[in-house]
Image 1 (cartoon, rainbow, N blue to C red):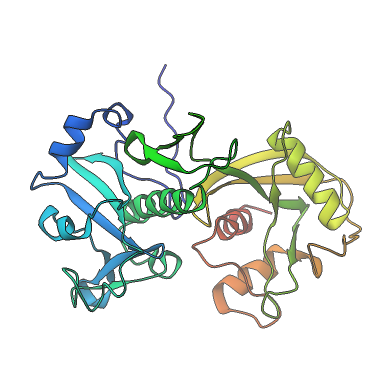
Image 2: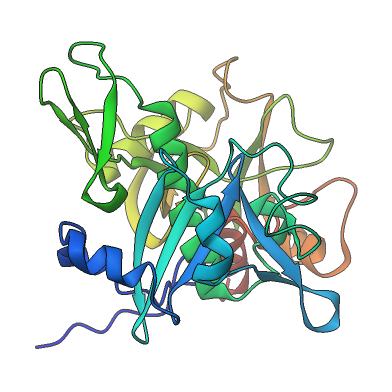
Amino acid sequence: MRLVLPKNPNVFANSQLDRAAHRRSDGAWLSSAMSQGNSVFMPLWKLNPFVIRGREGRSEAGWVTPELARPLIRPGTLTIFLGEHRNSAHFAIDISAEADPERTGPLASLGTFADLRTIAEEIDPSDAAILAQAKSLVDWHQRHRFCANCGNRTEPAEAGYKRVCASCSTEHFPRTDPVVIMLPTHGDTCLMGRQPKWPPGFYSALAGFIEPGEAIEEAVIRECKEEAGIEVDEVAFHSTQPWPYPSSLMIGCYARAKTTDIHLDGNELADARWFTRDQINAAMQRGSRELRLPPPLAIAHQLVKTWANEAG
C-alpha cells in the first residue's frame, strides 16, 4: 500500500530536489559535477541568497553557471551539494568573505542579495524550499566551526552535511529544532496571542520548542498551559513547515480547549484572546486595525485560514 500525502500548503516546503545522499561521499562525482555545464550554483552572501529580477519585475532565484561560480570558489570556500533535479546538480556556495559581490567580481550588476523571507513568495516555490535548505546549512556551518567536545576547529565533510574535528575525530551533523505551533479552539472560537514586540493588533498562533523526551502532543498541551493557562486535549496534526531562522521544523497542530479562562505567563505573551470565525474572516477579507493576522508566508496563517474556512 502506497501512502499518498497531500501537498504541503506552506512556503519552504515542496522541494523538487532529490537530495541524493549517496553522492555526498563520492569525491570524484562531486568534482566532475561541479564543472558540468548543466550544474547550477546558488551564492549566499551573509546568508542572503542571490536573486535576479525576472518576468514582470518579480524576483527569481539567481542560479549561476559553473563559469560564473568558479572564480568565487577559492580555497576554504564552503561549497555544499544540495541535490539533483532533472540530472542537474545543485550547489550552494558561501561567499560571505567577499567585500561587495553586487558591485565587484563575476556577479557584479547581475542581481542582488536579498533576505529570503522578503522574496520567498515571489520566487518559484521549489526554489524557495531549496534556498531554505541552503540557508540553514550555511548558517549551521558558520556557527559550528569549533568542536563541542574538545574546542578545536572542525572541517566540512560529506559535501557539507557533516563537520569533523581534526583533533578528536568527533563528527557533527546539522540539526533541526522541532517547534510546535498550535491553534487552540473552543466551539466557534480560536485562541491567539501576541508577543510584546509585535505591532499593535497583530495576533498569531501559540508556539514553542519541543523539549527533550517530549512527544508532539505533550508539547502542545504543555505550551498552551504555560503560555495562556488553558488546558487542551485532542491534538490534531495539520502540516509542517521548514523554517530557516535558523533551522526549525514548525509542526502545525490544532487542540481542543477544555478550559477558556486565560492566565498569561507574564513572559512569552503580552496578550491572548479568543476570536470568532467571523472576526477571523473579516480580518482576512477586509483587514482590521483590531486584528492583524500572520502573513501567508507563515504556517500560522495556514492554520487560521483552514480553521476559519471550516463549517461552524
